[in-house]
Image 1 (tube, rainbow, N blue to C red):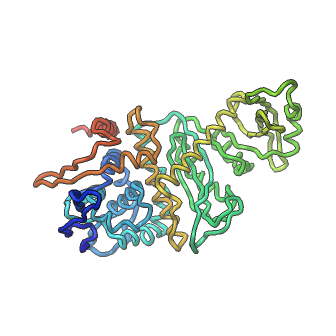
Image 2 (image 1 turned 30 degrees about the vertical axis):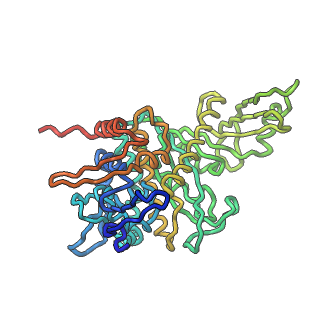
Image 3 (image 1 turned 90 degrees about the vertical axis):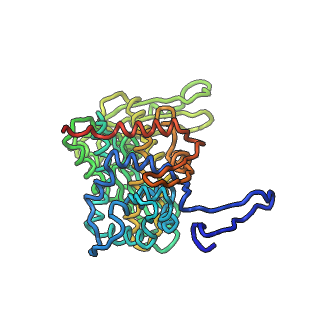
Length: 449
């Protein structure tokens, strides 16, 4: 095959099982990612990439640049959104008609950036101190633009760490005994809508709460002057008096898992005796409230205990939560348990946008790529929360990629316009039209004449 996309192949291969079938390859006139155009419409309605382009500085000094900075950023983010987690597929994507129109190449014959151009953009330009600082702020700034369209009445922040396994000699990688692998150990902050507020790449052998203040404080600062209720949840790794004092000073209500110790166990010893009578077939739950002050704490705080007796188990399951919420103990436990969705969002980030694909040699380049994956994740989540009809809002980000992004289309170019002849399989035309209508409703009203 003379051409990578196959356009110069004159005699296509035939299938043995039926010689009447002949295969032809038309890479520049057929795409498998036509659904990216809907995400590009959402991007335009919210002004996300244009805002990002205004905050980043171009590392090029020449005047003959073929690709605009905003287009390069779109190609990096939208490529990950479609499942191409690094630059290995950039050569083929540069000729893909959907990608060319997404990045802003309105001439069909124009190509997007090559693999080498995207590689320099990600590992050199964005890795500079100024651009990386701006890049880490983009997730929060994008969320602010969404909240500008639909202001929330409350904000709930969930903080958690995760694992990104490594399989080479990447800078900063280390063995983590908890995860049992060589990895990076990134830290994430989500809100209750599943948006990723901020993230940071860390070495693989650091504690789960290492650097929590540098990640959490900028998020808290963005919401500091807004009139809304503020909440925070985290697991036992963040059970630190410095975390409590910071949240209390900022006016946050929190529920944080507290590691068990002998003093806490003695406070609920009356709940640790097996209930009298035949064991039931359902789970029995008991709750307790008490004030507790550890030696490292400057003041006493409320602790909620939950004791669960499960059928067939000899010992109860015990959990403690430190909180400044005033609601009943059962509701405090229910509020804390909702942080399980944070772990689900991390799993979606791993599966849908492949943000564990951090294969660069330098730590700085991998940190940049994590931020690009985070932007792709947020754009996908904005589509789910803002532009999907109620009948399909239950779709996961993986389902969105497989059903919406991966729509095949044939491109027909005319003198004045270009037509994408899209396949109707998982997303029929009525659903796609409804998505575009909802996106159009997110556009700001026109300025008065």
